[in-house]
Image 1 (cartoon, rainbow, N blue to C red):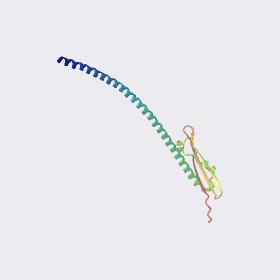
Image 2 (cartoon, rainbow, N blue to C red):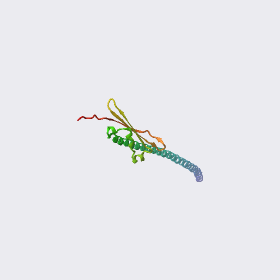
Image 3 (spheres, one colour):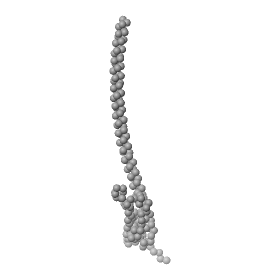
Image 4 (tube, rainbow, N blue to C red):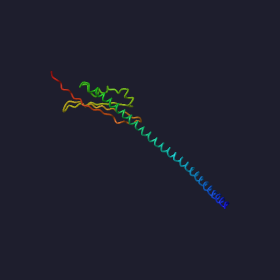
Amino acid sequence: MMQLTDISQNGSEGVRSRSSKQRSRSRELSRRNRRGILILEVVVACALLATLLVLINQVIVRIHAQARMVDQRIAAQQLLENAMEEIVSREWDDLKTENLEELRVPESVTQKLPDVTMTGTIKEYLEPVQAKKITLQLSWVQGHGRQIRPVNLTTWVYKRPEVEP
């Protein structure tokens, strides 16, 4: 009976060894498949990361362009305010459109605003009260020849009544 037991044990060991070989082979195949899946996952993750980086870069470029446009509009507004203050401080008889040609754009502003032009008009109104409407306009060209919406500033100056002594 001993021999039968040995044979049956040897036989079951053979069966066990075959099934363990099959298991190890299936594990090896699943590892290979898993490696292939891992590589595919890494490639997909890299593609998604690259797409995300491109989108973030585009957003940053647009934010930078918007910030530059805001800086330009602020510089234009400040220039017009300074010019208007200078004009309004003149005597009533010196408020003429011809005198607006004396106004110049400073070099610091021309660096920020390419191809900048400042124009202005003064219109005199006699009724209901004597007044002059002063309008200044500043326009410039953006990078690729694109005309930017001009900045306008308008004010009214009223003639002071003459005081009799």
